[in-house]
Image 1 (tube, rainbow, N blue to C red):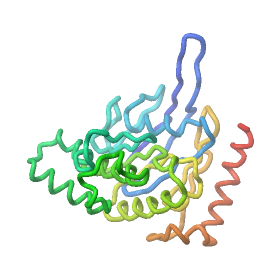
Image 2 (tube, rainbow, N blue to C red; image 1 turned 180 degrees about the vertical axis):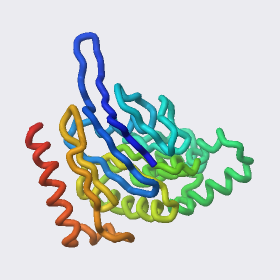
Image 3 (tube, rainbow, N blue to C red; image 1 turned 90 degrees about the horizontal axis):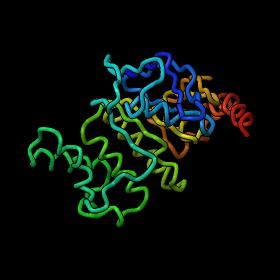
Length: 256
């Protein structure tokens, strides 16, 4: 479980201060898939960075599985950044195994774990390929498997699909959803894509313009498993889109 208790964030410089996050309280239960959306600059990534421990709140607290977040990556977490973080001089299997080197596992255990992950991500035949030999979508899959390698209970995803074309993105949505349903992690996704948020999530949280607060926390009552190719044509999807966009659209217009 992730608990945000009256979290705020203010950035200080020599000349001024910027109040990025106002007062955010949020509870994300184990096994949920929650997306956070909002206008550009509303602090979506800042909020995710604070959950991960990369930034500390100016006030309030964040608690994960009963333990306060204290300025370092919580051992329960896996994190996928917006940008490609693969090591270009490592093969796919060495990139996936990278985090396992810091765990008490034998070489045989690491090899077995990596092989299972590559099969899960449909990348077994590319085990010895280097990042420059992969498509953008494949590199994103490798990044996901790197995060999954250490068996995190929580995955934090910071706009991981933003730079991909629609076709590749949709296929990765399906793979991410399949992996989430098989492994059962809690997932928090920051995205600017409302279609993506509704397609994948069990809840969508809408942030306001800075200083940010929660404007809407909507449960997505579309049953799993979902077909990512057809779900957007359903009446339920359209109802959720209209409900959320009614709030989110006002924020975009206010910041235009």
